[in-house]
Length: 494
Image (cartoon, rainbow, N blue to C red):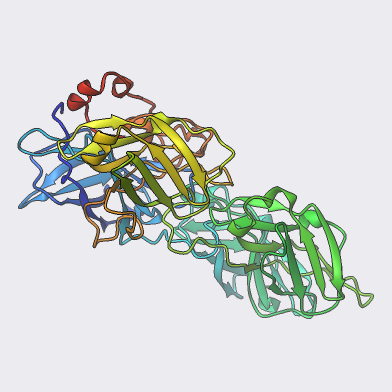
């Protein structure tokens, strides 16, 4: 595929067609394009990624759907939890039209998936069901889990009796999809509340769970509520009775993408409230979405020293409406008098970084690419980039490469293309905006990447049983930094 770019060749929608984690059939996803497709390139040009920047998966096969030349049917390895992802990424060489021109890089919201984030992307316990006869408890999470629970640890599952006494699990009986069944020695019938401590399980992407419990309150201390962010680094934990506390590290907060940060110090503003400080979140405290307490973080102050139950509370920084944990490009506009392009993101951009101008390109209506001259400034959630004035005036859209910018937490942006229509565009790739390119889920900003195959990240540490990352590569194409006239023959913007 060596033709130019067809700027109208964009992905309109992506839908999960079928998924069954318990059979040997591949999982299927359909990509629908705005124009008819004549040829399909490498299947690895079609990828899925989630909100958290820690895993992605590439298609094993891709072909034009019979009877519908606008749609490409892709297949992922059997057992791939495609519904766990939030975005679908289409490399610029994924397809071509009858004239040999290729598509723009796109990322769309994945329809039919269940990977949306409420609170944190870390798995959380939703419910538990006891079998008193067998002394077993089945725990259900809000995410599908790795095979065998991803090394589920029975000792991190348990139940509380009415008086707040904890009984730990003894062994794992089974793990299937989103459930884990745990064997206890006895007293399952006495449990009023069930819990899963931190890191009891891993989901299909390798993300470990946050500490959570479900059921009725005990007579010991229970976490009743948490405050919003106090200042830049503190949260209040309010219990349902007076308590004391000694170890700030047993109070943990989570970012929206599931990163856990332990407390550093604490004070006690009232008998039932512990205020914990987290200096590490100085620059991104507003991205904290969950606050949790480990067992024994606090003790009853009535003389019994009864430890608190495991618990968590949402605190509001859940990035509602965002598709990824990194900066999502939401709009772009061009000043034709100066050649400057203003890029708008859905969160604050770190203005302390030195961003490479090579991360930004214009795409003309004729399908040519023009590289930026300078990154002018960063102001809150906008970035101003300078281009050749004549080229900017003639351009149709702008592309930002993987990790062109990053947020205060260090999460990089995802490959994205936006129409230069005035900067008032809506959230990324809604169905009503089929012509506006999109985002690409990616590895953390410390993993630098340059070109189209930057979509293939080196996340080997998250090797999934369903081979999510087996085909990752870094075939970075360097030919796009040569003379701009040669760009007419490149595979597509990135």
